[in-house]
Amino acid sequence: MKKYLLLFSNILLLSIIKGYSQEYIPYYASIVDQCSQTNITNNLTTYESLGLKRRGTVALDNTYNWLKSKYLSFGYTANQIQEDDYTYAGSTATCKNLIVTKVGTLYPNTYVIVCGHYDSIGGTGTNDNGSGLVSILETARLLQNIPTEYSIKFINFSGEEDGLYGSKHYVSAIVNGTTPKMDIRLVINIDEVGGVAGLTNDTITCERDQNNSPSTNNAVSSDMTDQLITCVGLYTPLNAELSYAYASDYMSFQSNNEIITGLFETNETTHKHTNTDLLIYMDPVYNYNVAKVLIAATMHFAVAATSALGNDQFQNDNQVSFFPSPATNVLNINLGSLSETNYSFSLIDLQGKTVVNKQVENASLIESISLQGLSKGMYLAVLQTATKRITKKIIVE
Image (cartoon, rainbow, N blue to C red; front, side, top):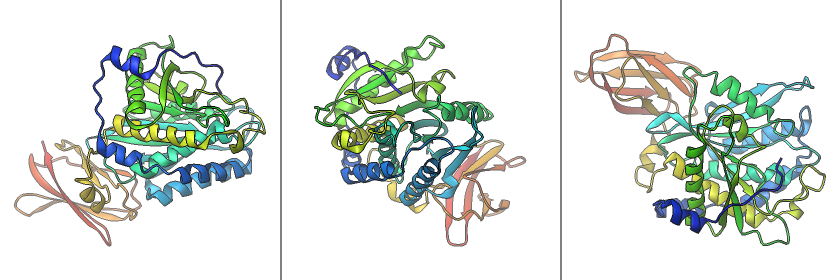
């Protein structure tokens, strides 16, 4: 859903003028280098084979189910996957957004959203937007077992081609329907990044918010987009050019006064929205390099661990966490990647006395425990399932 993009400057000039000091992190590079060209090409092939993905079609449902199965195969659990159903004008068909949540270690209630649409119009949509989807899938695969300070939501929207209906619904019903309103650090949108077969595809366009309604976050969006451009130079062979955001799912967030940025191919396909939007007219190596951009940027903005140290404990605990700590009236339990949803939760004081003991069945990803009446101090939090026991120290204030 793009037209001609006005390009402003390249990465080196921006880095010099802005004076950014983002450093190359070898561990981030080691993860980026695990991006798989085979996965990119195979997933594009599968996406294409699923056909025209419009509202009310079997192909749209099949694509949703395929995406869900991919996230499950990466190690995400059913509790981390949310189905967001909605309908929109002109059809009684139910459409679905697919949301995968990875809870952060330090800022679990603040989110980096990585999004792109999976519906198509006029054809299979292999570039618009299978190319974005496969980039999100590789990012989710590689970050599944890496701790990040901020929470991440990988979101696959439907309804984009008919007027951004999926993202509009998500912002209205979930972002603004959360009490308090969902705290979003940044939205990274990726739409049409497959390149053009036969051309030199060596540049990715990074998009910032330049809209006037509202304009409150334009400066922050520009700063975030400059950081995105720096990630391109640090971790990929691509060049970067700067343009403006419009006509894709990030605009639903922009109008809600969220901070946005985006990725879009610089050589723009002539095949979108037609039955020739096919892999043979794309450059899958370019798509692979753009996926590397997204992996690096997601680690940067979500503040991933900078070494493998600590990852073992993170995985041994199935990414389970208790927050906040210090806590006051409520303690939240993040089930992480633990697949068992029935557990007992206990708090034990320094004298060894159990002061809280609760059974939780069919647990959601996040459950809340009241701490009303507890004395201030340090406690041992214990989560016990049929096969797993996880203990962590917490402080109650």
